[in-house]
Amino acid sequence: MAMLALCWLGGVCLRAGATTMVEDIRWDSKPAYTRCVVELSGPAQYKAYDRSNDGYVYVDLFDVRGQQENLSISVDDGVVKAILVVQHKDRQILRLIFYLKMKTRFSVQTLEDPHRLIVDIEHPADASPPEEEIAPAETQPSLLNAVMGAPRKKVVVIDPGHGGKDPGTVSRIKIDGKKIEEKDLALKTALELKKLIDKSPNMEARLTRETDKYVSLDDRNRMAEHFKGDLYVSIHYNAGKNRQVSAITRGMELYFLSPEKTQQESERLLGALKSTEKNNGSSNLSQNPKLQSLLEKMIDEKLNRQFRLSRLMCQYMEDEFKQDSYFGQYYRGIKDAGFRSLVRQYTRPTVLVEVGYLTHSKELAEMVKPSNQRSAAIHVFNAINRYFHHQDPNFKPMRIKLPE
Image 1 (cartoon, helix red, strand yellow):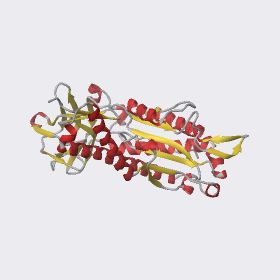
Image 2 (tube, helix red, strand yellow):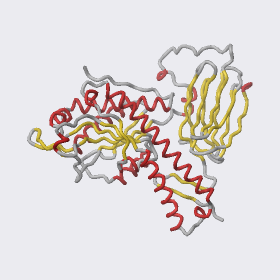
Image 3 (tube, helix red, strand yellow):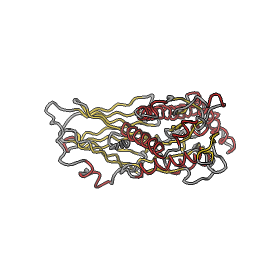
Image 4 (cartoon, helix red, strand yellow):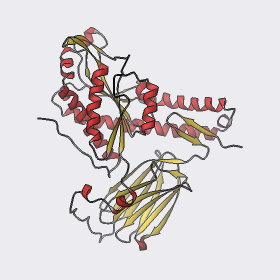
């Protein structure tokens, strides 16, 4: 019987006995041990090898694939020099190699909910503290980085809302003789954010539109997949529901995908898989409750992880905007929602920023100022750096100060 292959939007493909994907790798150094955590999309078998007499230990994960072929992580905490992650192409094996400064013991364990593999490298009592850096890290690349190449840049997909025939919110009053359209301010703010990100050594930005053109939600999703984005930031400007509300409502809002919509999307994805199977004349999924249960769990885990990370990104943005003299004064909080632009971006952490209300006359006057558009971009930029550093301790964050 042919093995069943099931695919959904985002290019993710599942099989009975599917390859487990690496979703995140992070490390931390404590006084007693160095810990490396590998987050996985599903369960994985492993085998550990002790070569500490030769200066290293390693762990093989079977039927597991990473997001890139090779990754080097400089640790240099007095016990662990570096971690090298190598993908064996011919065999579905992901190898984690820990280069040591001394012989020591280590332990490996796997946990569920979410699935992850944890490697702890013990710090002996006589371990020396890490040596003080002679020069900044960026001028002293590790040997592994020199050999393997630096890790790929983080990709931020910036989505300026609306565009073309879809103006979004339109102000009721005119400024300089014309009404202000949301699509124009969203694009200006997005371009400011792109400038900041593209100047970073470890990030790059991709826009879903760079001019005043209409882009459908499905096309925005396909572009994000094509760009292989690590984070999706959608930029919008808000509107009051009616004239009475518009007269008093102002302030920025942050949105992430609601738990209810996450569950609805999980059900939709599984339904799409079943429909695809039916159209292909196969009945493996319908006749295999265990496979169906596995798929349901994997989809739920993927969406729940997106939900958690999206909220985390919102919290970092909240911290940044609250420090602003204007945005902090009228800030309206983090909210969960089921915007279609968020629901379809389920394969990556996704946030939506409503910068301000164009239907509030005084706020409109603030929103059209280039200085406030740049301030909003700076706050989002700083939050993105904090988010990526939380996800990857090897990521060196940058911070931009607002003009005095």
